[in-house]
Image (cartoon, rainbow, N blue to C red; front, top):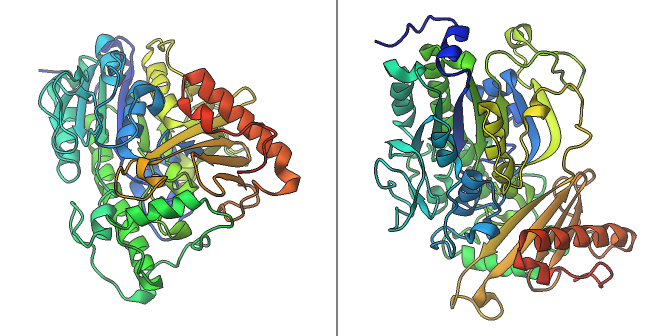
Amino acid sequence: MGPSRYESAEVRIVKTGGRLNVLLIMADQMSADAMSCAGNPDVHTPAIDSLAAAGVRFDNAYCTSPLCAPSRASMMTGLMPSELGIDDNVQVPDRPFPERSLGRVFADAGYDCAYGGKWHVPGAAHEASAVSGWAGAPEGSVASGFTEIYGGSHEGLAAACAEYLAAPDRRDAPFLLVASFNEPHGICEWARGQAPPSGEVPDVDWRELPVLPPNFAPGSEEPEALRLVQRYAWTVHPTQGWDEERWRRYRYAYFRLCERVDAEIGSLLAALDSSGLREETVVVFTSDHGDMQGAHQWNQKKNLYEESAGVPFIVVPPGDAPNGAANRDGRVRGAADRDEGVVDARVREELVSVGLDLLPTLCDYAGIAPDPTWAGTSVRPLVGSASHVHPSWRDQVIVETQWRFPGLMPPPVMSGLIARMLRTSRYAYMCHSWGLHREQLFDLRRDPGEMTNLATDGAHQGILAEHRRRLAEHCEARGDGFARYVPGPDAAPR
């Protein structure tokens, strides 16, 4: 029989060699603003809010690619999708999948590694069983290091995780548990007129629907290529004829799906509390990418706008919030604040690349040395910092995307579209591989909805040149062939 669940945290941590457990919770297609703790009045997410209240929410976190497989592969390896040779959901990588991925790293360090829910990482597979659904487990896949405890992706996953946490031997060795929920990805089915995997979303009176976003209209000088690829997207999600009410119903359905995954997360967190393991477990919540929610008259993902590329990222250290960690107003949040109903505990503004920073962060909490090939950095120092912005933290993140549709569109679209975003502290610079207005520059401080393209504005040519230079340098340093599409610093706006 295992030790009592009522043993002290100190005794249990000694039994696991002084190492912390890790619980990684993932949603699918959940935008950074699709949480009530982010100030969104159209959605209610009490479970996620409780994580934000107990830990730190990063307000400027981005995926490395706003698409499932590239983003998830990046999170598992700490590498950019272009370094992995993965840029869409169905391709087989054109190079070997890295041996030093999340599950393998933790398994080699003596952790019990369990994975439940959606996988969708081409080139790697679980040992216990083939990946359920999605891309499957092709021959020659690298072992993921995880044991699959549940092959579904929504209802039933929290219960499977609860059973795993309640096992009598769970306190004999540290664990890494990944709970990967499918929702709100079911909005893809909803947009095709189908029921989401978690069930239909009931209709309501139009007066109860959320309003359209302030940036519903397309912005100025939007890339020609984006509107052409949107025509291709209409073959899958026919939104071209939607009126205002239909778009508002889309947003309503999306937020209800976010609430469904929040309810499942609440069940999982209750199981963690019941297991008596919360005080020795670091909890991280994130998503692989966001959803456009009607912004710029887009649904789904893949483009580089904030709604698509921005993701939630919350880190909750073991037990209560770290000592001395202050909020923006200088107050230290604690149990008294939670009793008062304060949910927006601490919010950090540093730029986080979830695909690059997740793996080093989890390893940092587990006491595992980072791999020298990883480009990311642990956010643990930020979680315990009382300063508003860490002075030595990175000043840029990169997001990659690519559309593939050979033979379905006229030239030059027929071969696809490649794009990159360089996000700095104030600006977002986007460069597309072809087309009129293929560059975009947004001042996110003055224009958070990304409505005014400043790439052709004379007053911003110096800023444009600087962002071109930085993107080109990044591409060259990481072996990303997109460097050939980046105009020179002094070139006329494209």
